[in-house]
Image (cartoon, rainbow, N blue to C red):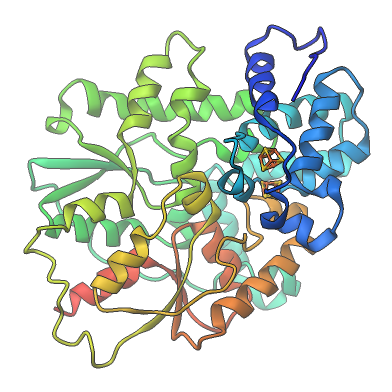
Length: 419
Ligand code: SF4
Ligand code: SF4
């Protein structure tokens, strides 16, 4: 694609990046069929190709309008279009760059700005979030249905976190909403890794990965969260504390995809570029770790005696951040089937469930439609439970089904505890 960037962005770091991305798009339209919003709205401007066209106009100097903003807001940033694109267009980066420009040109109403500000204050702050969650749980029966569905009545007990006893060690990201809603996820990962001879460590002062602010166009704020995590993890990695860390484990694929990008996003910050690149290199989704560690391990016996009797039938929802963002395909499914679980076939597994970070709050109608469709597909082959790999999807799916929705690592941990 030919481009002619406007003076306001030409030659800047972001301008150069956006220009390179735009030039890789050949307008073939292969991405259209996989785009959830195009499927629902049947409007080219709600497709990846249409949005790329809108973004090109803005980058070439045409002032953005509310209509431009609306079409970009409706994008889930699910990145299914990246998986489908034969030219390797990095749509996710392009939309992050352009949303920020459009936000500055178009602005928001006072109400919309307040909601976005409130989300940025509450979600990345575990203590505020935990307090509000507790209050929500107390008055749950009085809440409007839409909010009530999102407030879990009680978190599953986290159980024991094994003591640090192994020479092999890995860090884990605590995250922001996960410790309050599902503390068992990281504890389950710690127990499984402990069986494999690896101690999982939580670094003090690490917290939100920065994705919430970054994707709500408060990019500097998002980058500050990222720097804070780099500062929290670096002593463990560099100074030999805890004998050195082999990996930084992510149990939420939404955070994982962001931390994997720290190296890129902080590449122009001289104080952080090198450390951030190292941290991204060390970052692994828990499925990547287990895929390698369980290959020859006698500690996890995957040929479990009761594998054929009393099988749990699981429906796995692969989050967009796992399959399109991190490009991890089949790892979780392989681990679960080897462990003796039955996995149901899920049609249109590439489609987003509609959670997409804060999308379910900011675009409730579209999000609900996607959720309804996803639940139908996940339940179509009569699973006993649904499992996923990201806390946002977990909460969103649980709001629409009577089946229990868990992180797959919790289910595996439960199974291993019985043996
Ligand atoms: S598939 Fe890729 S190259 Fe083709 S229109 Fe979509 S983004 Fe552009
Ligand atoms: S990120 Fe998802 S919703 Fe956005 S254009 Fe790509 S496929 Fe469509």
